[in-house]
Amino acid sequence: MPARTVNREHARARKGRGAGINPEGRFEGFAREAFDDGWAQAPAVQEARGEPAGAPALETHVTIERAKSIISRNDSPDIPFSRSINPYRGCEHGCIYCYARPSHAYLNLSPGVDFETRLFAKANAAELLRAELSRPGYECDMIALGANTDPYQPIERKYRITRGILEVLAECKHPVAIVTKNALIERDTDILSEMARKNLARVFISLCNLDPDLARRLEPRCSAPARRLEAIRRLSARGIPVGVIVAPVIPFLTDDQVESVLEAAFKAGAREADYTLLRLPYEVKDLFRDWLETHYPLKARHVMSRVNAMRGGRDNDAQFGSRMCGSGEFAALLRMRFEIACERLGFNARGDRRALDTTRFRPPHRGGQLELF
Image (cartoon, rainbow, N blue to C red; front, side, top):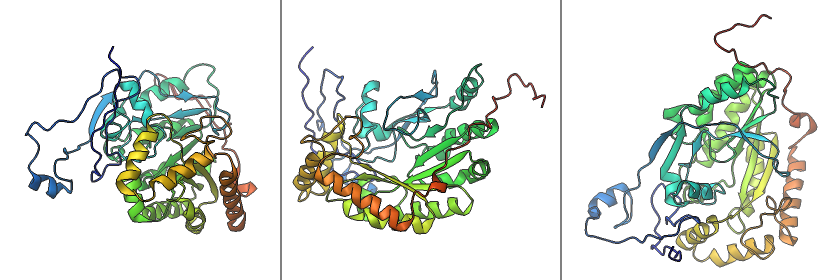
């Protein structure tokens, strides 16, 4: 097998997309390079699309997938859940910093543009979940939705897979926690409010900054920051416990907004808060560096210098205990700022952090059989 080379395709900002390049995954032995054969779209067409001349049109392609299992399990000591469900593979939100991007390499697809344009929908998710919850000996524990890709990314509006999963969990009185960046979650407040009344549901909105221009570049197809705050307000008004995750904190780009994000989220009704430092595993580090050079070339060296200082001199630190919050003096100062702001505002009070109820769980009905009691 020939030695793998790095794709040096010229980076360009594409409207509505986060990645500017589409490098090969780390498991591929061959590299591909862009070549103009004269069949590119006319400049006028691309200008109408808001794309730079010469850039190919980037449409979203969805493949229906018949998954074999639906509940993923982990024993990581720094993740607050042991079970999760991902209704989709790939994420149309296009967040350039997404730590899940490298997972597309297992599909022989690029963690770059492919990750946000070539998606897989697990159409049989609700069916599989019902079967897994029906197994004899199943022990109930909270399930997290949104651990790898966003369960409310734009294609959920059409495929409604997350909605189907929630319907099964509500029927079985099974606790669920959701993390999302999309206000589409408001569609399911009918289910979530009823589950919350029984202490079976909790929602976290991920929000790392309040600057609409920065957000548009950083996470192009997420709901705007103001819209996410409105989602917090509406969910809270329906009695659904809501928290905010300030993630990721990016040195010299979003770190100065930690306190303002917390203040805005608390005012909107969030009562729990957490944060995560920027993570750059595998291919994400190259994608993020390319994005910095494209959008913030004057800040690029400063950002990566501070990232390295908070990651033990490297772009990424995969060690348990430090991978989420970093290490060193700057990481300690960030943690102190966050904790002081939370205490001042009133986040994470003891009554707001109670565990979801696992005692109400009842397995799904099998074969149409009704409950005796």
